[in-house]
Amino acid sequence: MSSLKSLNIVIFGIGNVGSTLIEQINCAKPKLAAQNLQLNIPVVTNSKLAFFKSSENTSIWECDFETCSVPFKIQDIIDFVQSKNLDNLIAVDATASRELVNSYELLVKNGFHIVSANKIANTLSYDFYESFRETLKSNKKSFLYETNVGAGLPVIETIKRLYDSGEDIKKIRGVFSGSLSYIFNSFSDDNIPFSDILSQATTLGLTEPDAREDLSGNDVARKLLILARELNLKPEIKDVSVESLVPKQLNGKTTLHQFKSRVKELDNVFSDIKSKQSQDHVLRYVGELDVEKNTLEVKLISEAKNSAIGQLKGADSVFEIYSDSYNEFPLVIQGAGAGKAVTARGLLSDIIKLSNQVN
Image (tube, rainbow, N blue to C red; front, side, top):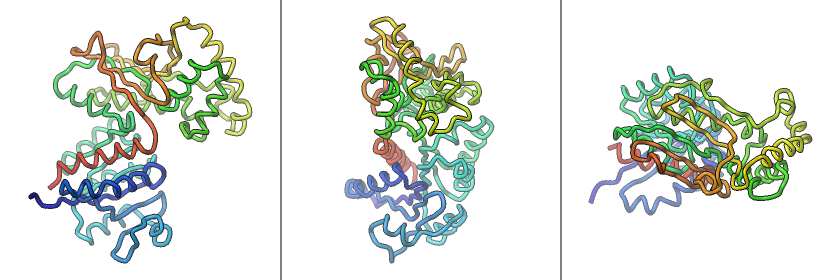
């Protein structure tokens, strides 16, 4: 029987995704123990406070965090794990923090692997992208980020495997946003004003509190950039052509309150677009990377109902990969592309992958 392998995980961010990940780890412990794997969580943090686990703490981390958390700096966490002689260290980034990304190199140099749902590190300048990977290589550490695109779907892993096997990938296109998937799937199928569907999506927690963050297309653009860089292309975010769905009069200096009070101004805009389609077509907001043309586009399109993208339902995402082997009929990856449970599960999957790389 092989000896027990222990990983020590520091979780940055205990919002929806981070707290769900802790629950999933705790639930998985018996099954992991049967595989001789133990996941320890010595530190959890929010943006300002950290809880450092000791033998006196309770088994309920939320109570411990509320009563025992203290202000911290990254160096405090490094000092703590070193004082406890902890090894097999993993920093999990369940935040959207630029500041934390700026600390990735310090963490790597002090023995941490990185698992991240945060897209920022992969969408900064290509110089940073390349430099950080050199730091990882020289320190023999890994950076896993499957949840950057498609939450729990194996999109990045599939593209990496195809590319590394010598497959010539020609195009990647699809619906990358769960919120915009829900909005346009509903709008195409139902005779309901666009503003009402947008309100439904926000109430369901599918959009950001300010839905213009979703409608701007910037999140889809970041995901498209990440996929392009997986193919060893070197675009910057400015190279992505983005069709924003927010009219100019509702953008810029318009407050969130003003946007919400005027949101019905969107109804005629999208109703006109919908009415001009062929009867067998539906609206979809897609990201498209054309490798041969060297273009990255985020845009609203009219898609045939019988295509993979056209048949999409609910808040699912779908990715079509065209290559030498998948030319006429693309490789299709489809499923829940957003949500705290699938994103947390994707982070846990990356942690388990790392367990196979450490001693």
